[in-house]
Length: 152
Image (tube, rainbow, N blue to C red):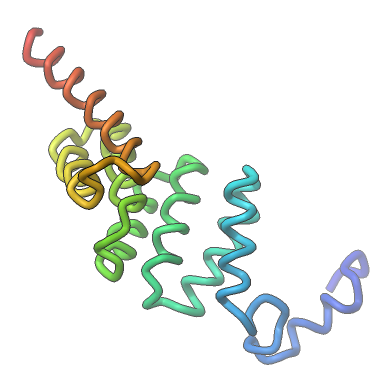
């Protein structure tokens, strides 16, 4: 092992996983990852969220955040899988459906985009949630695209 690594981190590899920093409290790591994601530190958020979904594979919110981070890093196809996995566990998450619709829109998968966006809109009929508002804006983009395609 390289001497450039601080001694306290060299010792970590010998600790049981549950006792390493960050693994003892996946919820705290998840909160940190969300702050990193909001702050634009995508790669750090991705690393933290990858640990979260490994530690808590049934936590839909963690999978949704992981999917959003993957999408923000340009990894759309794995993001779709992560979001779908999360939405199976948390089918009430407006932000998850809006993010999924946005990715499908970017990938030119119009039918899938429409389904995800309609689901987000249905979950927020009065447009009170920011993700519901975003879903409506994305749905308007999809309508414009479909209209332009039908005219050509």
